[in-house]
Amino acid sequence: MALENKLNITDSTELARMEEKISKKKAVELFENGYLDHYEAGTFRMLAAIHKYLFDEIYDFAGKVRTVNIAKSNFRFAPVMYLQAAIENVEKMPQSTFDEIVEKYVEMNIAHPFREGNGRSMRIWLDSILKKELSMVIDWSTVNKEDYLLAMERSPIKDIEIKYILKQALTDKVNDREVYMKGIDYSYYYEGYAIYKAKDL
Image (cartoon, rainbow, N blue to C red; front, side, top):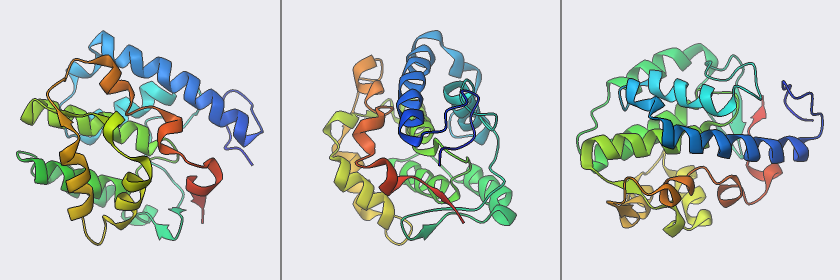
């Protein structure tokens, strides 16, 4: 079953294809139009703005905090009843060093504030923080997708692995569109739509 969407697509595979096509187009716009310059890096307001920009043509819930509990594999993200508090706590986390930034990224991933499209939005959000604080971004083309996914799955318990993987991929090419776009590349991070797709509880 596909998520309810503005395109009236009922097939999940077709919806995934359209998500990829539209979100990539919108991500290029975000990179080129300076839209995010109006938001403070590291805030939920910026993350919500990214999500809304990427997915507003597809979902009514674009940019809105989810109202359902979700899980991926065997991990349950923050319950709805604690979600707002979790988001506020993440926002208050420091972000002046690489370790602090990744810890903030991990905690926002645990919160998983949106119904769908968290990963793509959060990678742009992460890069915006790194760019502001360290004048660096992640070169996602050098990040092995399986290693990344496994490290993110383990990060709520131990974040040393994801820190190592992302640190090796740091680059000062902050204005390189190709480097930026690898973070939004849908197929790069989803080895199997059915495997990693968040499911309702």
